[in-house]
Length: 420
Image 1 (cartoon, rainbow, N blue to C red):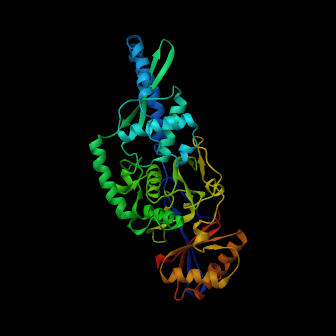
Image 2: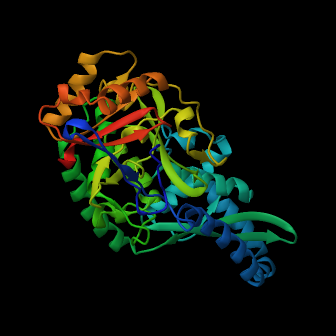
Image 3: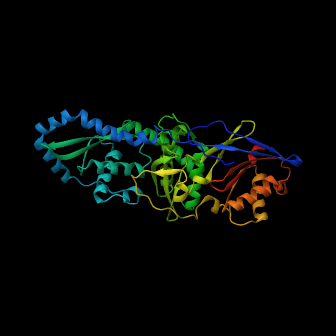
């Protein structure tokens, strides 16, 4: 049987019981996960498209009035902007920012400056609505901490049939005073959460710390309040995939790790995750799927951290995820910061003492340990020897029952010793 990741809620799990000789029982566990519903990621960006379309239709009359009454002011508005200093370029090292051309970067800077200053209406230096949309999405990818803004609307300024300028108007969900108060609360929680890691630790340790932090402190709740931003994570500890992705970007940023939010689908459902950079190499991280669990034969649910999604290659990502085309993404081939390789849980050869030692250590500490194998034959050999033939007793003294998850997709066996 194969372990199957589920991304749409927690369903009843099948359990298979096989009682062998010498009172050793083996239980195949079924894990469960969580993911984003149709309303999550799609709405996060679709509101922008919808707002644009509604604004063009609803405000056509007002735009005509501007055209007939303010033909000269439109020219004055352009002159005024030419006299203003350009916004500060604070995003030079941000991933999505780097993927834009110079015109897109300028619009990005203008939008970000307006959002940070909580300006109401800002004329931007383009009349290309598609460029405006790409720049805004890049801002959202690079900045997971913009919890006070939810999309935007825009106004066209025309002379006759000629489009003269676009006015960008962020949709704020709170006043600046409310934002500052929430930011103060978030800062206090983030400081406490990051107390166990240092800016001087390795990139791997930082990524692992954040991944575990979110898995242990945040629950996936489909209807969580403020689920599309970090407020749901830090103030309520309940969120969906967009909230997880925003929190990853925000927390890693505090630790000096470059990352971006990626949107797309996972198993056909709208989803969001992260592109992260560790030691100069890119990986993918999906913290939503890191928060996993399984159910034992009595029906008791137990949570555990699934490290498959902590530092994925492109090939591993594509086993369940499909990014959209909005953000140009690198080919991720690095494996040095893969959890199983880094922790010594990647098995490339048959070494009984080594594998047995891993099982013995996990048994002693009553932990879940997942071993990933380099090929199917090696995994099947381990399954036969330790589980079917019962030799796990040679390394785990006193064991009478094994709860395990067999995952053929990832070539893994998880031994769930925390059920004893």
